[in-house]
Image (cartoon, rainbow, N blue to C red; front, side, top):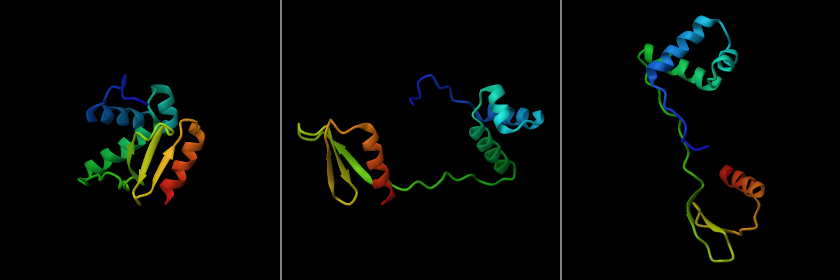
Length: 111
């Protein structure tokens, strides 16, 4: 999903939302349904704000490097080429359907 149309919400606004949620007595899912706020985002901000209140730093989750590092235009017989971190290259033809590509990428990311 693109970021177009999204409005970045400030930390202060999230603090107000979390406070309203706590005061409501509703679950995150119920509050989210009533206000249009993603319940997972709401609980994330509750966690961030509670850590900040205790003076703890919140570290960003560790993200492992991608399994492939480069995408290049491939010869005319392929739609694109994937250069994997291990040096191997895959030429993906234009006829390769999206579902199959998703499954292939899932397998490659597990290695």
